[in-house]
Length: 141
Image (cartoon, rainbow, N blue to C red; front, side, top):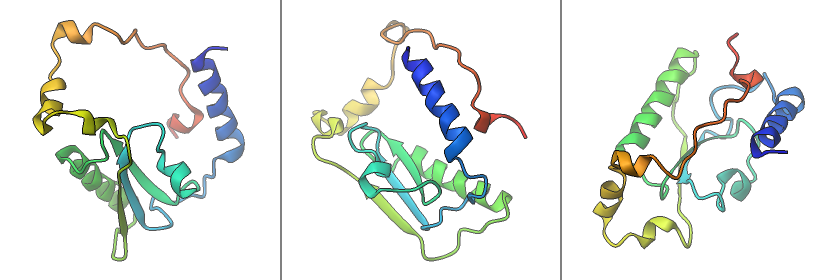
């Protein structure tokens, strides 16, 4: 079984038996977590989160960047459009971890320099994406 087949099978199992349509768009714990994309430190595992308990935003190094702030602002707009209001009493967790790859950069500006890829850099190592069926959760209503 390929990785895509495995992930598709897991998504189907989630959609058919573990997804709750009753979950609200606003996290029940009124918590937003900003964490690192490092797969060793998934906030869901670290905090034992259940679906709907927290909004999790992950980026390189778990940093508050302009993109992170834009995402947070968009989440507020989505909440308002859905009839919710952010309100008071929220928890913001900025989750960092040991042995983070971003700490290996010699200079903070190295990160921005390394992300301005030339066409030569972007031609490899990533293969063309493999098309998969849309998730039942992503289907239009």
